[in-house]
Length: 412
Image (cartoon, rainbow, N blue to C red; front, side, top):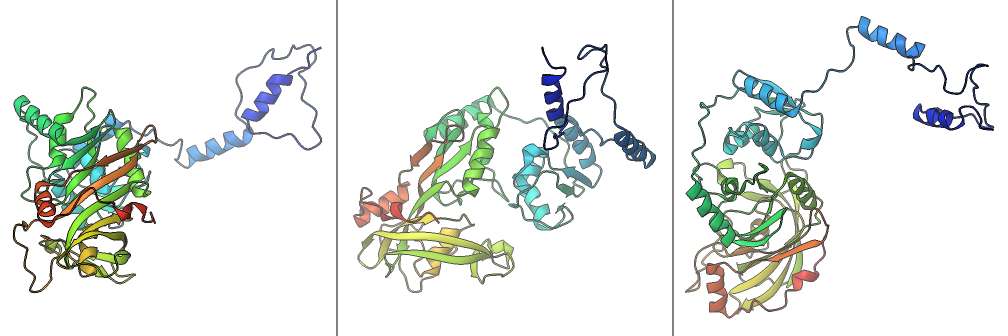
């Protein structure tokens, strides 16, 4: 004989979060004459719950308001943008986004350089505090946006022929591509992002790669304008979030090659400093700072001498553990061996550039190994020497097939 309410009673107890007392309390049986489950109506709100609701209504609280959908939020944001200050709430799908990227995603009509300027000046606040453009957001944080005056929206004058030219160019510098990831061999001299006076850059070119689903490829890291080599692009939003986490967690392995002045006495070593921006922001230069200094961040680089040309020049392989602005350039200068052709950090007195070597930055993002965002299997991509570095290597007799000892350097 089946026991009344046996299975349904256990399920109900679990769903309601109830626990049976130790020793096993007896189950509640239905009243005599009623079959199990007969006459059950809608579940009533308990007395304590009803009282709580009545008290909330009396206090003017009530249930939490419905959060507007993404389309509604964007429409409201566009309206407020034209009139004055507004406050945006970071959504769950915007967690871990950089602040400048968050604003660019919400307000694509605002120039990226302008976004960075209002953040740098402290006009934008997150939970009432000043922030940096590369700070990351948490779900539920309140972002205060200052009043912005924008030009009237104009239809984008995109040319099919121009877009095709851009696609052809990007194809010519593609090292790896699949449905989620694109790795480019960025030429030296091509900016990754726009800025004051910069109209041609990789970020702008990515608009030509928008697919039918409307997803625009996104940058997940950056290289200096004068640095050549591997640049990783996410082709989907999912890939962008996953790859960004790989860079932050340092599971992406990067190897750079550089030609430097002189030859380090210690042929393999570790450079650990704190780096901060120079007081003069226009200089766009990093300096070695003390631990605890304002704006200082820890920077760690492993290096190895692969080969040398007498005592004049050395070919260094570098493995950055952290990813600070100008980290490798500042670190090379810090150990007394700045990178050849570096206009910001090369400060060796009475040093003459050897004949036949161009006065351009000799720094290459040679190789990157990063987990695929969907499969987790490593994507391993290597970039060739840019023309000016190839010319220098040939002139100095440096063999690119030589064993690179930095491969065995620590990851932390």
